[in-house]
Image (cartoon, rainbow, N blue to C red; front, side, top):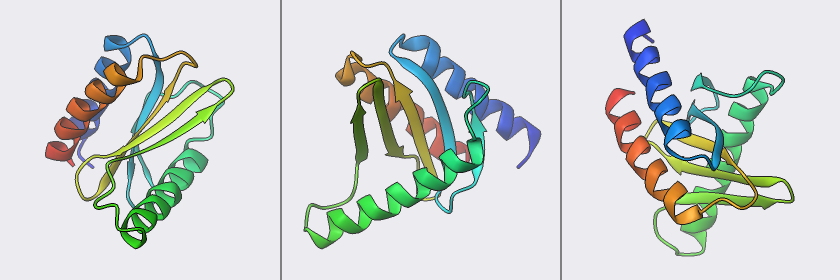
Length: 123
């Protein structure tokens, strides 16, 4: 990927995190499980996050299709310490975010949707 595309994606991720105090970290992952860009804190294994994101997205898409729920819009996992939210960013990308436990999810979803549209135009 060209350096300017990578810089543009990192700018989008940084803007996403700064626009919402509820978003702790975010990443753009290819649909086949490769990390494209992230602003994850040190200590998180980016390759593992990318692989899990792609697997969850594939499972979510298949489940939505098999259960006749239409196209997949997002995947939401709620944990004791916070949430994982994933959203398609065009046909080749996935926007993955980690949020705080008490996140205002409506605002998170709105911010992610805007970011996903920008990401889709770049990748």
